Amino acid sequence: MATKADKKNKIRKEIIGAAAAYSNSLAGKKFLYVYGKEFFEVVFPTDHFLHLTGVETRLSAKDFYKNAKRGKLADNQFYFSDRHPYANARKKLPCLRRISELTNEMVCILKDMRTQSVIYKISVTNLEFTLGLTENIDKQGKKINELFLPMSLRVEDSSVEKSAGGEIVDFIFEKDASLVKYTKLLVADQNKVIPESIHYLIEDRFYKDKIG
Picture 1: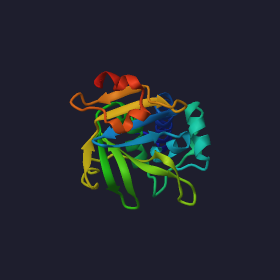
Picture 2 (picture 1 turned 120 degrees about the vertical axis):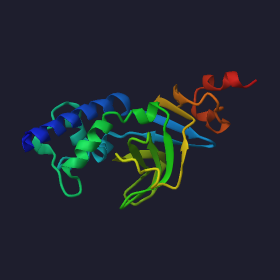
Picture 3 (picture 1 turned 135 degrees about the vertical axis):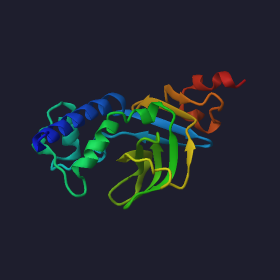
């Protein structure tokens, strides 16, 4: 039977693996989700990784991620609590390692998903796990820009029921965060046309052969 130390070490390895996946596929990039006539952009800051793991730490969010990314996170650098129990972390972390699936596969966009303490204006789900997104605001609650940030990873099949409705995504684009326009098309519904409202955000080649 696994000891508490064994279980915690397994969680540590899961966090390190998830940090590597987050670094390779999400950090430093922007993603543009388009559904119907609506769209939004998402970034994955390194200091938001901690929110998604389901563990507590006395480290800063940036140091926690840095240690995990380098494979140097120690067992005594994180812990569990009533708010963040071991069972939740064990359930979340395998999904966190797969979180990039929410950027490169067909997903559902949820509106106003309710949790016990928060209503997420926008969420993204593959019906297996759901990423709750928050607006990018400062400490005074003032919106910094129009980007959305990852705040909560939920592993349950009731996210749709807890939301005000959902729509299947039509397109997902990716770019390096330093670039002006989106350079990669990751997901596309071949029966849909890229709306003109996002032409200014993407490279011309994605729509120029559709016009004229």
